[in-house]
Length: 160
Image 1 (cartoon, rainbow, N blue to C red):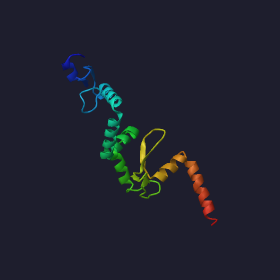
Image 2: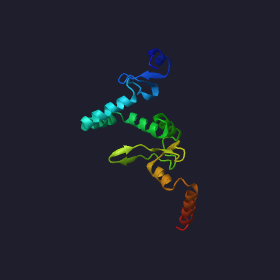
Image 3: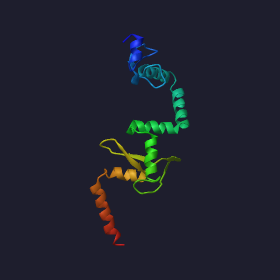
């Protein structure tokens, strides 16, 4: 696959640094260099001046919170911010559990509600506030336990 014409006819690119033809998924979107070469350059730059790299990353994250959130959702659940926003809109902007619009304030910063997901399949479901998300997780998503707790609450609520 050394012929440039062959490379152009397939889903392959030639890295501008190492000169090796590779599948296009081995490249970052706007880079002529393969991911291996880019990652090696980043490693070397970090070793030279880690403070500079850390500051650049912190600045980018501060200036692009939506991009960061979208990337995290895609990495963790295979969906982006659009999915989250659509789910929240379907729920009329409230938690699927308590039906309240609860935002958590943590370290002086407002945190969005969580995208709930199945721990077996990893697939996303709906949007939960922090309290409901934690409760769901602490109960191991066990419906029997939840029903037992409801029964327990009703039993002792009558005694008041």
